[in-house]
Length: 126
Image (cartoon, rainbow, N blue to C red; front, side):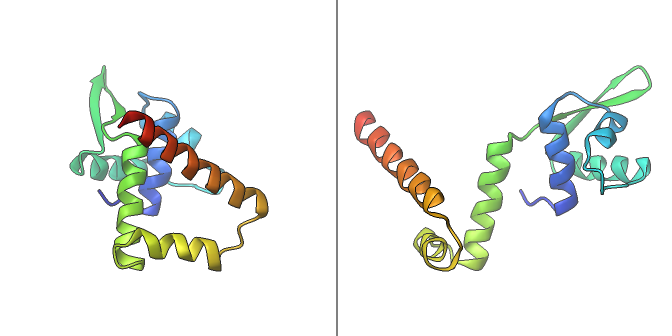
């Protein structure tokens, strides 16, 4: 599932605390986001069509819940990025991160630790 930047902002607000109304979501958006209520409702309707959220009625008010988990959305977004920018390969992405980004020594150690932990978990589960 592909989410636009605006949809990511709305989904992040919903993931932070749900269920939520459109007005509650508007209050959670970053200060620099000044969308009209109708804009938020339009985007929520779009997210419903994508099966990212579901709306239920509570009286006269729509209440929204995410249908997709944040990790699932992240996985999909990362897969799309890898496919588009790195020819579908994880190795070119990792090489790019290692060579071209400004990883600090601490970030490099954290990345190495994550990889080592995942290797250990895989060995233990096999």
